[in-house]
Amino acid sequence: MFKLFENFPQVTCGISNKADGAMSLSDENLSENFRVYFQKLGIQKRQIVRAGVGHKARVVKVNAQHGGQVIANCDGLYTDSKKLCLALTVADCYPIYFFDPQSRAAGLAHCGWRGCVSELILNMVGAFQSDPGRILAGVGPDIGACHFEIQDDIKTSFENFPGAIMRRGRKIFVNLPLIIKAQLASAGIKPENIEFAGECTYCEPDRYFSFRRDKPAKIQGLAAYISL
Image (cartoon, rainbow, N blue to C red; front, side):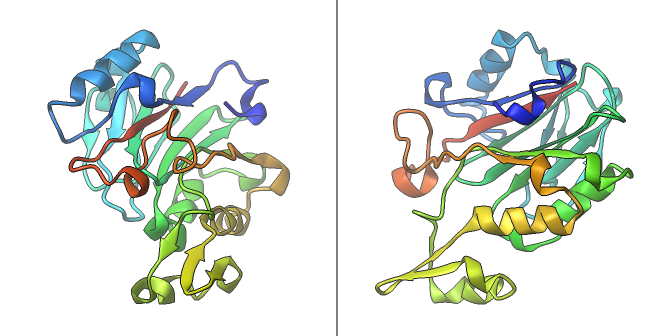
C-alpha cells in the first residue's frame, strides 16, 4: 500500500474495503467479516492483537502472549514480536502504520480528530525507544479535508493548528492530514519517511465505508493491519 515499505518484505500492511464487508470489534454480527478477511490473508486469530479504540492517546506494547486479544481503551499498538499482527477498525479516522527497519518493530495507530490534536502520535513514536529519524510512517485512507466539516463547538480543539482550519462560506472544515504531518514531524519523523495514501473514504463510495457520508445505524468500519 505504501512505496515506503516496498523494500521491506518482513512487514506487510493493508486495509479492507467495502467488498470485504463491514468490520467491527464490538458487534458480534459483524465479527465474521473480520475473521474471514484475515483468514484470506493467511492470518489466524491467535496471531492478531486488536486495539479496542477509545479515542485517546494510549499506546500499548504487545507481544505473542497478547495474540487473540482486544486491548481495551487503546488507540495505538506497538510490537517487535515476529508473526504478530496488529489490527484495528476505522470509520473515517486515520490508520497510521509505523515501521522501524533497523529494529524491525511495528506500530499501528487509530487517529481520529481527537488523536490528531492529542499526544497519540508522540506516544506511538516514543514506544519504539529508537531514533525517530529512521521510522517510516504510512497514513492510510480516511476522511479528507474536502469533507471533514466541524461546528464551532470543537473549533478551539484545533487552535494550535490554525493553518488547518478552512472556511467555505458559512462552513468550517479542518485539514486533518496537515495536522498529522505536523505531528509526525514534531515527533522526529523525517518528511521523506512519511507517505499518505491520499484517498478520502467519503469520496470513494464504491471502495470504502464512511460514517459521515452513509450515517449508518451501526458503524461500518474498515479493518487496518500491520504484520511482522
